[in-house]
Length: 240
Image (tube, rainbow, N blue to C red; front, side, top):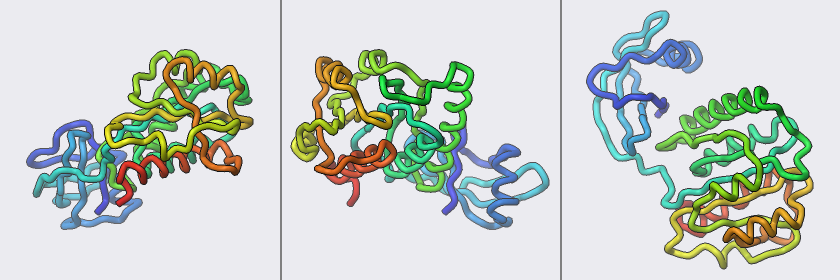
């Protein structure tokens, strides 16, 4: 069933905004009597029926409320070294589908792309929209937060996850040895093209992080976070 996120608790009769209404009527070609799901991030799905469609507004009636069961039991934050081009868009889309909780673009020593403040803000808005669309498509219960771009030292300082993992081509622990039953929050650090420099890895480790490996092959910066997140979801029984 088509899902849309709203910024209010759906009750009774609901009118969608113009953008959502246009998407329902023009892109999806839904009709009066069709069902869709609304979600406001409160842990519930709200099943709704379309009552009316006009040129600017789609009106719905809320038919039922039920708990959303698609969110993983572990919260994972991705600290992603800023890559070149549109790779971050693909990373955010795929990681949202897999269950990421938030994504933080991080400037590292080897980040070639270094947008200024205005460009970074524009990119953040674009990334948040991608996360919204991917959440709706995949039936998520929340929209992951795409945080402002930051530096690695600041990212490490702000990170309060229970387990901090830096994936490093220089070697480290097997990921399956790090994930235990009591883990509820994990942060994963992925370098940009070229990976992390050794002193960056040591910075993360000195702040409670542990180096890990994703196997004997060197993965691209847009492949590594997807592989890492998939492994974490599998090891925490969130791919059943």
